[in-house]
Image 1: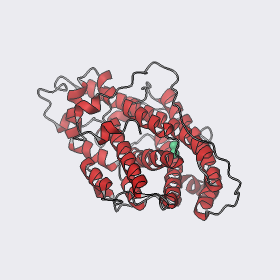
Image 2: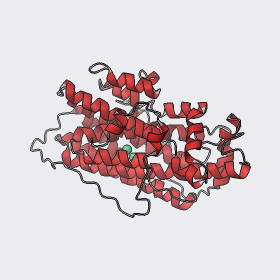
Image 3: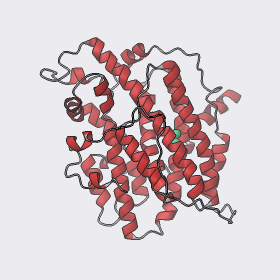
Image 4: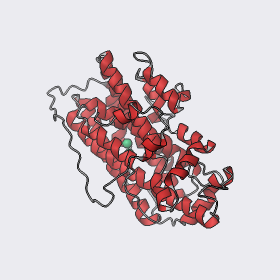
Length: 377
Ligand SMILES: [Fe+2]
Ligand SMILES: [Fe+2]
């Protein structure tokens, strides 16, 4: 990894200067190229010898859905109403910041209802924009896995995931364009992370970065917002996206569990470092520095306050509730001298290690199948 030294070498993982020194210099570009060094692998072994992946592939084929016909796009969304309805419980978006802090002497001191509502709207535009960009990252990474993974079962499964991710980019883009009020460019930390994952040609690194880390976080974040939102279109959209994401994370866990058994201690250590780098970048991305900038507020001051807000810390930690148990299941937490356990402790997320892992949670989360069963009954 070319860039992980800035995180591994960071003395304090919460160093604000280091976090804010990362910015996206290409916000006006329409395209962004990343060079991936990888061999496209044929396999002549067509034997479907991995029953867990075969089962996942069959499930993926029957649980496909269509953004056009399975969601009701005629539902009208009043974004301001959504923000107000969620304000009470919507911790994590900054909406409660005004009540949680004495804002005297902070950049928020002059804010009234108008600014807090605008912050809620900008936060939603920003959050959904980042989901959309992340989904495109998943689309590209999974297409890459189709080429690079050596097992036929995994190529078959990854092909279904490519279709899933196209649908996810489509639904978030459509929701942003027709229901919300503006796009944001990709967040600097998320962009750096996706670039690193794509540039590393080793197929298992693509899985670790995307299926375990990015999608593990997405699954937790979607679940959190799904619970909080009262807007029916977004609620159903997230339920359906989560049905797919649970399979994707399971795909990562099932594949890497087998592969990691062959790796040396040094190779495992490299994967621990990569997992920590990814976790830190994702934590940093949720500080939404672009939103503070657009609200015309001092970014450093705002981020400093946000990092200390207790509800914010809880939200941030919860995002890791899928990642940590999955890393444990893969043996990454305690391998070697338990380096990753220590690092996840520093990030404040180790408490999730014994939560449910995502190896076979996907059948429980298949809301698409449940709706179909209910409809045919
Ligand atoms: Fe996705
Ligand atoms: Fe996914």
